[in-house]
Image (cartoon, rainbow, N blue to C red; front, side, top):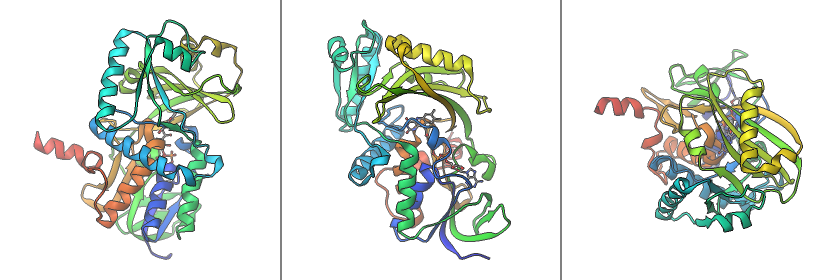
Length: 374
Ligand SMILES: Cc1cc2nc3c(=O)[nH]c(=O)nc-3n(C[C@H](O)[C@H](O)[C@H](O)COP(=O)(O)OP(=O)(O)OC[C@H]3O[C@@H](n4cnc5c(N)ncnc54)[C@H](O)[C@@H]3O)c2cc1C
């Protein structure tokens, strides 16, 4: 029998690390169990775009809250986290997408998020390497980018400096009494947290989390080629689709001068190998928007798995009927952004403290609750 903890967390991706940092800061005795490198799962594969997204009122509330937490943390982040307030430009190809720009601006204005509508000329001036003939865009200047694995390491270090312990092992079983490790030992804990991202269903049977594969490519150094995180507004159609494979133009300037190019979304693709046809579609889409990308040299291509839920919102809080087993997973393509808010919501619920935003939309039991009221 090992020492007893208030909170035992399975997984040290950026979400588990954020939960650990927040719980340890609140004075709880925390242990984190991770078999691999800190932030070595989806966190290492992610793009690191810290973005306010308005797919649903609950999504906008969580992303906005979490982006604010990143802004507050920014002065304390070490250089290797590469926090840059690059801003996002949502690129509108035509007048139909300009209507979406105006709709989005109204939503953001309603919650106090700064934006600026760019016409075709202003867009070309902001990003000269975009193709001509685009209609305009929406600039969201306070969105940012980070380097996610170093973000996770920073949060884990913060947790450890506040007393959290890290065990290099895998969790075999989570229960209301604690966690059983693969080496057979048992770690007693008041609350256990499943923060294993796309692996979460292995520890909590029956949860509605599916793997959604994504590809990214990174180029050599071309400083000044891209200035903001650029996302085509068609991205919304691709991110919202829950069936077909999809690609969308997404380009990010790294502090090194490299350009990170995304992205793809695939269900049912369980192998981590690079899928040449979908990578080809993704890069062709990028070249459609930025023709000179075809002249750049790519250094590396990789894949990762997002943890997707049916209603596109994460699962944050206790499992129905098992109040001492928490979930912190299902963040799909927004887990870097929403990690800090997730940490706050987990610590707040464990301690019974009020949270800064309503927790109900993210509770794991929400779909059963909805079904009961139908
Ligand atoms: C291509 C791509 C681009 C993305 N771009 C962005 C973006 O721009 N912005 C954004 O906000 N999000 C983005 N995301 C999403 C983001 O990367 C994820 O939502 C986030 O990293 C999830 O973090 P996590 O800690 O939940 O999961 P992970 O980082 O996967 O961590 C889970 C951890 O659990 C560990 N684990 C697994 N099984 C066990 C076990 N049995 N016991 C103990 N530990 C275990 C794993 O080793 C792993 O370290 C992107 C994702 C992909 C794939």
